[in-house]
Length: 434
Length: 204
Image 1 (cartoon, each protein chain N blue to C red):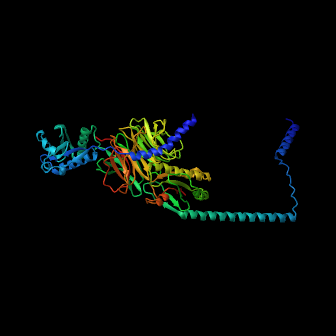
Image 2: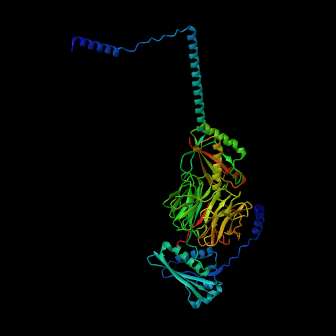
Image 3: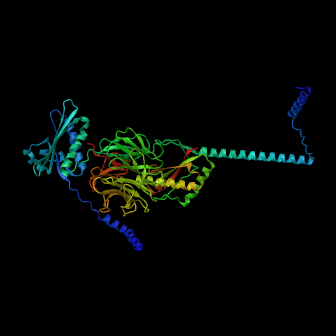
């Protein structure tokens, strides 16, 4: 019996390189159907300064483009007769918009209170094919909340058209090279509001948002050891969290926010540990001869995917949260790292080396449906999912220095997060901030 | 009391006093007779002893001088290493040499064993010196896996040095992964230099 078992595994392992070649050649990402949406000129009511409406329009058009679900027909792309038509049209005049080639019409208006401190936004979403009103909403607030309010409109439009709310009110944390060190930064989904969170000139690495969006866990060499710290989103209240000798890196919060899985080196090599969010009771989950790295939680909090080189090369493995039932997930290629478990689907994105370069792939947690998502010159690494599982942020050197990119989960619509010079790595996506 | 008994009492007391007051018998030690020959021998031995003492002192002095000089050698080789945002005053010395690693590997290469032996010899010479071994990687691969690899490189280097008789409380380790390249280049030459274990002195 043992003899046959051995034979079985032998065939299995020998066969895998061929499977790799076949899958790589076979990859065709499904085409993304983008819905054409017309954005009519935004109207400024009463004495509202027109630049305010232009600002709202610009943010909204950009949001809908970034979502990847729409082909945005903005004012310059409209027939001349429609370019100056602003505000919410009455149902009788809908017919004329059909000529613009859109299926959906988004129209709205801005009102600024005479005191200049508060705004009010109103929008209507209209189905031009069915000639019916889909939804209309109004938002108001102090001027400093204008951007989030516009993002909420974009989220609402995405919800109406795709069945799930957008992620325009989310943020991405990442590390940025500064001199010889790295600092933690955050930016909005649309690349706005870039903020430096740490300012300690040290090496600050692998930020991870807490599930409640209030804190960021990250590693810093402040005390000449890679210790884990917590800091709040405003960059205040830095507190040491895990300072065991050796590595305290690559934190991953459990979905309930009660534990952090991380790499710890206190035993002389990196192992996956689970630690309570008070920084106490580290519990070792992995055992064996390999280096264990980069834990990531399944959305139900029952399993953890991680990297291990116990087979001789780094591969993705999955285990139950108590460290049992370890099984290997990836067999193609000889360098698969950085797993990130989708919060939506049972899919795991990871980074694989292909012909000396690195690209982002995704695979089902049962090992099926391997798909290559990037194939650009340069290295594409550190994938991380948006909270709705419909986008992946990653780092890419396609334009020289490493920058954070965002793409739809199928690999479409790849774009740089910000117009920065680069030096960026290790993105982590926040929850939705309402 | 009769006169007779008084006299007897006094006599007894006197005898008692005599006994108490009487010291132990003085015993005169007989001085051995010293011959001239023996005296000469003794003198010679003393001279020899003195000579040996001097010789030893001189040797000690010389050794101390050598150690002092050597200490100076280490002292003069030390370069304070200022690292922004990283706590602690540390030094680098050209006397403690780096070793390199093969791509994705953490085992000590045979050609690097002599370097580690030299480093260990230096540590034996300066028993107060404490070091930290830094494990480094090249930029390829992911940051986190490289941190694990760097940890392993630092620790396999430490393990090797421990086998050479250096106590473990004198060696700490740290992994910098790919975060502190010595060569910022993006080519094979730079990568080879960056895959290293680097030694710093944390206490002189």
